Amino acid sequence: MARAPAFSCTACGASHQKWAGRCEACGAWNTIAEDAPLSAGPAAKSLGAARGRTLPLSDLATTEPEPPRAASGLAELDRVLGGGLVPASAILVGGDPGIGKSTLLLQAAASFARNGLKCLYISGEEAGAQIRMRARRLGLAEAPVKLATDTNLRDILTTLDAERPGLAIIDSIQTLWADMVDSAPGSVAQVRAAAHELTAFAKRRGSAVILVGHVTKEGQIAGPRVVEHMVDTVLYFEGERGHQFRILRAVKNRFGPADEIGVFEMTGSGLAEVQNPSALFLSGRGTPAPGAAVFAGIEGTRPVLTEIQALVAPSPLGTPRRTVVGLDAGRLATTLAVLEARCGIPFTGLDVFLNVAGGLRVTEPAADLAVAAALISAREDVALPADCVVFGEISLSGALRPVGQTENRLKEARKLGFSTAIAPADSKPGAPTGLRLRHMPDLAAFVGEMFGAG
Ligand code: TYD
Ligand code: MG
Image 1 (cartoon, rainbow, N blue to C red):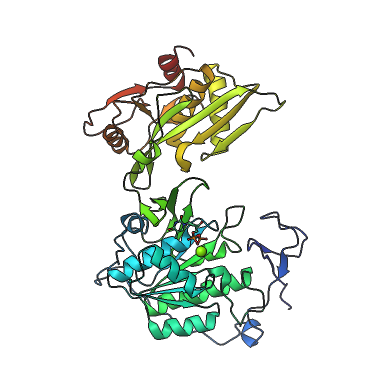
Image 2 (image 1 turned 90 degrees about the vertical axis):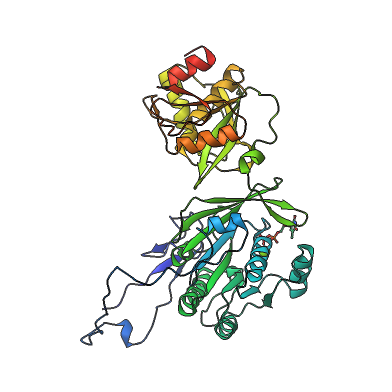
């Protein structure tokens, strides 16, 4: 029986049963192409009567010690990796072009190399002279990093097999060209083949491999989501253009917590670590203005304070604007609906702009209460007290639900000079933190207390 041909989207990698003009998964036009059969040999037809060998089975228990992780000494990077670099692991670092991936990884390579790890930096994007110039500018010219500039996957693999580095950095996966795959560099098939071979190399030789991947306008690593499944760890390097802050975020990590972030600042001489991000994100705060609320959040294992800013203004439009930067638009819609239904505060006919100061992206539900506080403060034109932080999840009934790590949030707030925290009624602070904790059972009580309405 003939096998039905399979198709996949060259933009997002989604599989399809049949050809179509538009990919239903990503919405791109003219991107669906037939997959080349894996193998035309007899094996492709049927497994037949020939039996495979029996796999050796083993126990879960092991006496082998965990392989030692290599530390770079860049604390922000090591933490995001889950405590250093794991041997034989493959890591994908994605981000917008120009955000600073090459800079970060050159600095990382130099740091690992200075700590005794053999590092190879292979660039398919820039000329050797360019990279050397950047290294000089970053003060890394003397670091024992080996450099190659090439895009041929076969040559790169041969070099890696001969050199056996502790860490190989490939900048970028989209520039590689595998001669066994019949399509253009950067296409899904090419990127997939390169990622597969390089990941296999990592496992075979015990080297760590870092792959750089560019991100498309839609925010996905160009071409393949499949690469994300192949590697052990996926890190995104994010930041707002015009802002100096850069955030390295673990979105997947087989060897550590996901959602961990490292914060850097782009300076004239490369990326500088930011050890106290809360201070940085709150640094621009002047006298408290209406529409601002300080959220005591948790990013990964670390507390981070940010300012949530809202602007509410009469709308000239039939459908008022809802513009959100750094927060989930769906959660804003929910919070607005709860404010209207449970507290009698409508936003009909009003444009709403919501923003996290400093360019951080906040995904925690615990931000709900701070968002609500900023919204009401903006609408009523009343500033919140300068010395207070806010956190808590809002349920659809208008009740406030406690969130995790209250103690950590309070300690961080105390450290940054805040004296009051507004939190859900059941929040358990644990050890005393020197902060006044004001418990609120529900959103209506919060509104009544803070704004004398509701
Ligand atoms: P780069 O690492 O080349 O970005 P990517 O590899 O993600 O495309 O970084 C490019 C930007 O970083 C460039 O616009 C200049 C800026 N930059 C600095 O501000 N300071 C520096 O020391 C360096 C090396 C780059
Ligand atoms: Mg680059």
